[in-house]
Amino acid sequence: MKENGFTLIELIIIIVLIGLAASLLISTKYGISHSSDPLMTLKDNYAVLQAIEKVNAHYRDQLEKDSHADISMYARREVATVVTGLESGMVSGDFTSFSAPNANREVNELSAAGTRYVLITAQKNNSRMVTLLGN
Image 1: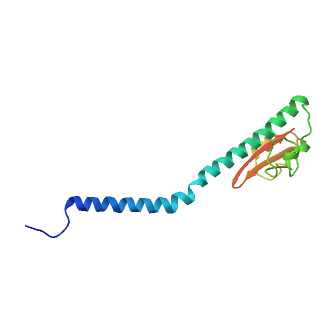
Image 2: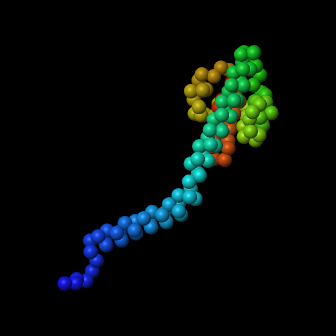
Image 3: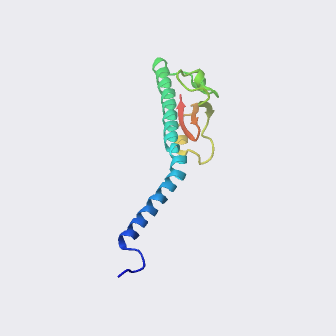
């Protein structure tokens, strides 16, 4: 006796094939076009972190030589001229103060009068990190 319709095995095979086709389409459309974004962001974050560490290490070396070292050398648009090994255009510095009301209150309360600070900013693509140098 012949009945019309599909058997259970045939239905399961069709569902599995549809699922595989859908996963291939989704991974092809979204997976390939976005697969490098996290890796590139991670590389940029690491490069920015290394740049900040190089500036901090250079500053510590200067302080070991002279505890009253002038930090104005870091207050430039291009810190790579001062610190070797930095990618050009990636790190900049500028003098900053904490006189804005309610801004950085803890630093205001702890900073000594006459202390100068340089805000160092490292940026590559969308990755950004800052550090503060003071003497």
